[in-house]
Image (cartoon, rainbow, N blue to C red):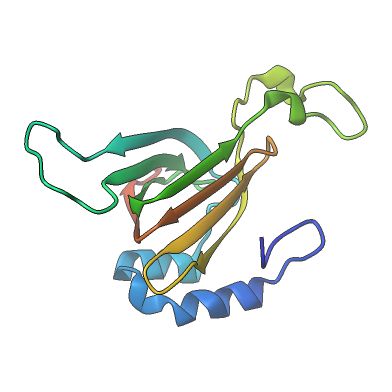
Length: 158
């Protein structure tokens, strides 16, 4: 990761990068990225969808969609959709999610993927963006895509 790693936390640099890519995001996504983050959000699910339909035929560039439902730390619910995906990597191994200086798996593995810790979106080229995400379980996710949509789909009941 360019802006966030064990050695580096460049919030200002990442914010500036996002501002430069503002035209590549919807208004709702821009607002979220400028004012919020998914740090400490709980991942409810991640789904991969193949939008190609062999019964219809046709040739669609990058018909892969990834969709995640997240529970924000404040109780609001979000859906994130990455459209036009041409690369998806997820490196999950529960045995890496251990307490410091121990081999004991954190929370006895009951938190699964665990919470979203940090992420960064960068330009891959003029068409594609890359989203790198690190979870508390030390899971690393990388998605290369054409478009991202972040939408609030529910608010915490008062």
